[in-house]
Image 1: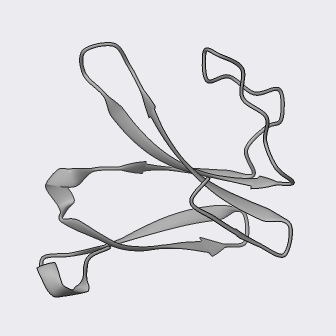
Image 2: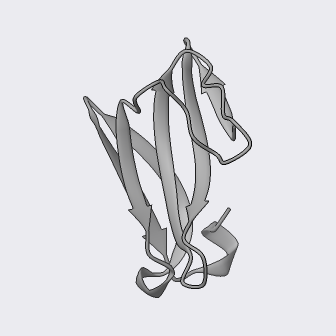
Length: 78
């Protein structure tokens, strides 16, 4: 869990065995993950982080959609 506001939880997850995929997911209420990283609670929104697009600047929720904002400026990245 990276952040929580107003009952919403922003979660960072990795999936895959050799080729890792990185995701940000938004949940209403705190998700509980088992030892395999699975949860019964469905994510409200999911966004794939693609490092080739740039450095992570921020993650925004727009309705039921997560948007990843990228930057090339190291001083703006998180």
